[in-house]
Amino acid sequence: MLPGKDLRGRLEKYNDVLPEVLGNFGGLRLDAVVVSCTGSHYLLTPEGDRALCAELSERAGAPVRSAALAILDTARAVGAERLVLVSPYEPWLTELSQAYWESAGLAVDRVVKIRAGARFSPYDVTTDELVAQVREAELPEDATLLFTGTGMFTFDALAELGRDGGRTLLTSNLASAWWARDALGLPADGPDAHPLLRRLAERSAAATVS
Image 1 (cartoon, rainbow, N blue to C red):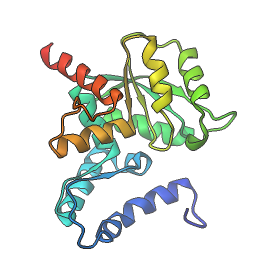
Image 2 (cartoon, rainbow, N blue to C red; image 1 turned 120 degrees about the horizontal axis):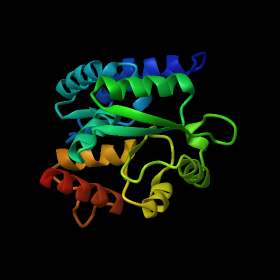
Image 3 (cartoon, rainbow, N blue to C red; image 1 turned 135 degrees about the horizontal axis):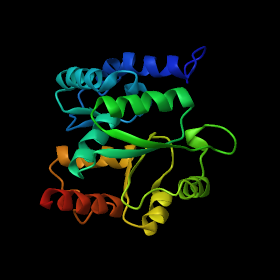
């Protein structure tokens, strides 16, 4: 936490200190780096995000990708052109998130606002709350759902929601893992990959065939 700063101020500061943070790895050789905070990169727009990650990659001597750009990579891999945004953010940050995806060429058909109790707090959303609110939204069976926010716990919820039908389920953390494995030459459908990644790999293969 940064004393005296509101959420937006903290997110802006995160971007400012990234070069310094990467420098703190010292002589440790990095093969790839994922910046696991989507909110701060929504402030940049996709173009600004790519520019920052290119600068960081040059500094680090290894590819650097934000979680937001990793989502774009994964969405393209699975053939997604339209999204349902599932967001636990405060409304202003949800709007920034939606604008980011739309600027990148993805249509946001609908926004499902997720609450922890009566408030917006990504880290406090329980699995039961997330599953219930998504199901209450009665989303199309062929929708691609993007659960944004690296701080929202999603693994158990996705395992449960995956039983509901053929929807494509994306999260910030899944996309980050997808990109990192790709950057390291590891297939997303490898035997050591999480089942949720292997499911995305199946969607990617189907999109390639079609």
